Length: 474
Image (cartoon, rainbow, N blue to C red; front, side, top):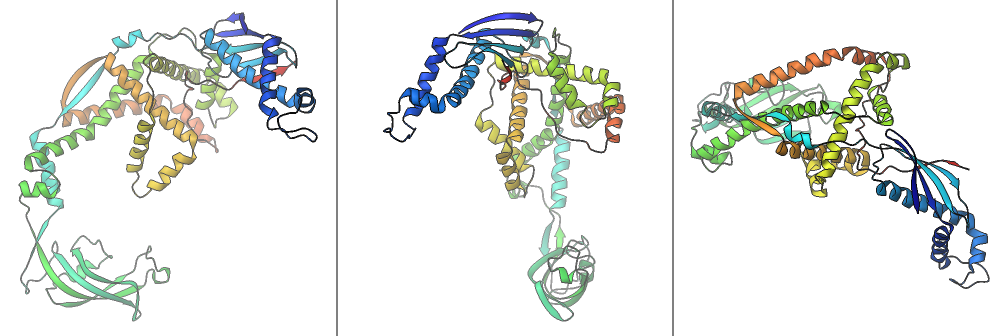
């Protein structure tokens, strides 16, 4: 194979690839040998069909298959040898080809610009550490204790009141007939919370142990037996006990009931929990700061094809006239996004950052935990939707790159209180709202369009090798 660069215009290059006739015939002979053992033709034993017969019968199909293979192998090798990273899909223009002929074609490709990442070490960003005051931890523990009241058995003549826990058995009927789900044993209700049926627990105020109480309540809209929805049911209740709320003592036993080793351990766990509530949001601010700094980096030339592709994504669902009107805004946003994507990709490649299968599965499990009760649906979604899986992999890849940049960049460690963290996040949210107002015109135009799409398409990774497109055969 011989490769020469025919034309060079900025990031656009034309590479002429020449494969001699002998090499092409070798590829053809290998393919004939490969299919010889699989072809069954009348009058010939398996594996003994002469090459000339195979050529007559299958020559065109075999050559087409061999041509595709040679184009794929040689074009990939030509780009790699010339250290060209394609920014999009290269085009192939066949000049000379055919059986028992040499192969000559042109690769027209736009390459990714050279990106300098050394300056990433000079990036400055704020890294926040939230210092949780002991009073804040105690306040949270007291709230937990308040929401987990301890109930104590009362004497048999003590009447229930709001806030008490009533334990009872019941049987229910509608129009004098029992129904499915109309029985319960040792049902517990905290009076005043109205968690069973609307108005039910109010009718249990004033009962005492061993009382029998008839309670009437309307069955709700979501009742499983549809023919009983909104009908009044009569509940015959046998009161087993009435329990009074008792103030919980916050001690080691209380901590152990919550899964901690002791009260000291519980305070440590609660302090970490409060910290974690702010950690992710504050880390997101650090990440956004780094991305903003990357936007200031200089990239000499943005590939035109990537720019057009990004503008299409930004203007999805908009009318042509509105796209033209907002073209300048789109270009500005698109260039920033492409520039950041190029820098992140280059840094990821230089530092050999990869996403392992274990990391991808861990992220899927994280998504599953965020949607309790829908675990199977989430798992099926990623198993059946490869584009969603690729997008998730891209998210993990970006997070790993940002983490690696943080290690090299210059972090300013800032210790803040919980109140200061809340103010920082509030101010950040305010700035985001103000920024979004600057883009209001574009968003308003999108709202005018009836059919819009919410599909997001990330910038193509510089690591990926796009499929080659043959544009002409002469």
